[in-house]
Image 1 (tube, rainbow, N blue to C red):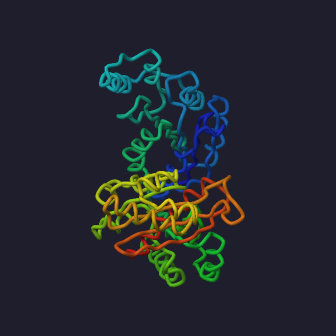
Image 2: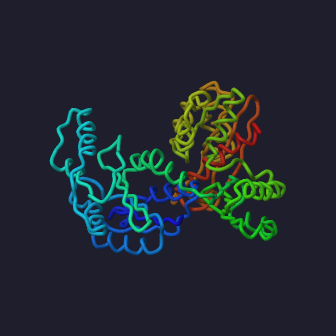
Image 3: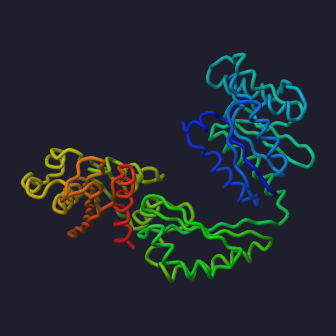
Length: 411
């Protein structure tokens, strides 16, 4: 089954929001054996929607549409579908009941604008929306299927997971798309590619290798498809076995694992606790750690020691040390690590201090200079990094590097 995705919304075209729906949806349907060949984004304009529908209809078996099903005048997907399938709008009592129930739980009367969402193309079935007001639309014609769904991410995900994916999995006649991803750290994309050049040349021709770089992390995705699910998996795992011999120290996780998730598991499994003191990362490490459910079991807290007075008063860093070496120094980082660990009484502490940029650098201490220190028992380890001149990337790469120091020590 070949699919095309159509995302509707002016906010996507002007860059106001990222099209995360399309990214997520394409990945989910691939796991059901459906290959997405094109993703199109169009404005909230009926003629543009019709044009996209007509072009996708020529190429795909399955068209997945997101957005434009809301109650306001700029939501034109329903009207476009009526014209495309040559039908009118009718009020669906099930949808209307869902809308009334949705608003009654909140003590709100249903307005005429909200009631408009119960008007659906008469040639389409509905996918009921239990957590929102816009129903999904299921339209079949000429042995092809179009499914239109809300653009609100959590409504879309619920509808896809509970109604669309089960159908696609039932329709799968034996075509499997297999992905396996390895998470790496410590080598940039180009250096990694050079190191894996010969290995990549020897991959079976039907296994595709993709490099997915992000600050501090490069994911290696191996993909293949076919009718023999177990055979495909066996070949991919054999390729991974060879890869692990080449970069054993750089592979830190699999699939969607994040650095904070990997470190969190290590801390939890070893009954260890962590505290942080952040200067240049401004709380990013604490944020990453606490995105993981259950992180309260090992993360005790952190201090954003942005100003030197906080380093001195809260972390007990000697003011003369800062005067002599500066706040961005090995000595200051190690003193901060010791200070926050003693303050919060944890097994581990991690500290960052640096010049995130784009201003503040000097010839001796350029933008991108970072010191990261880790304290454990009587041991303090510090590392110096030079990350570049992009503030956002510097903050994220520093945070990943800091968490990795803990990972390396526990592993």
